[in-house]
Image (tube, rainbow, N blue to C red):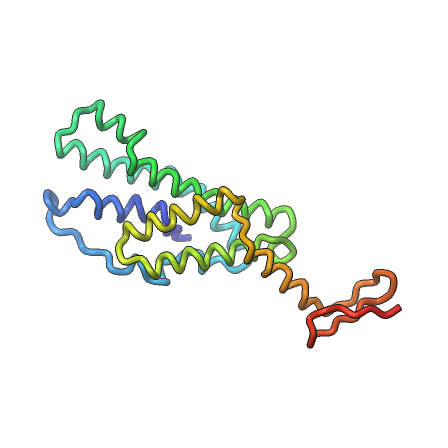
Length: 207
């Protein structure tokens, strides 16, 4: 699976945009599809199997992504004759390095949250699907409305950071779960039979 996640985009594309390599390596082809829905890889996830496969691929992608970004950043600073100690400090503590690292970690935390819910209760019988669909739509909206690639990265970082602080829960997720419960049409024997009234989306009781 091609895991074109936010962190990977930073490593392979954002670094080029920020470091302006065209000044010393010739022109670089401009990426004009960064805000296209076709680049929103989460659309490939639609069930438990695809979610678990994506999570496994994301684990494999982490080291490669961070190495790519670290290499691009180091090359940029070396060619501008920064001192070695300054390069080392910025690679570990610099604002851009922290942004990239944290965005990737927040993204992984989001996918890991879904994976844990799926492993406990399944895809359809747990909050996993509602949580995933909500944040996937939000991240897609951020992508589609981003004017520049910097907007995309910063917007995704802020959303994932704030979502992580709430354990990826949102009020709309609770509403979605209640809506799914309201459409249950099978009977449940609780002190009699619960008969579902679909037109009202509410149960009525019969003894």
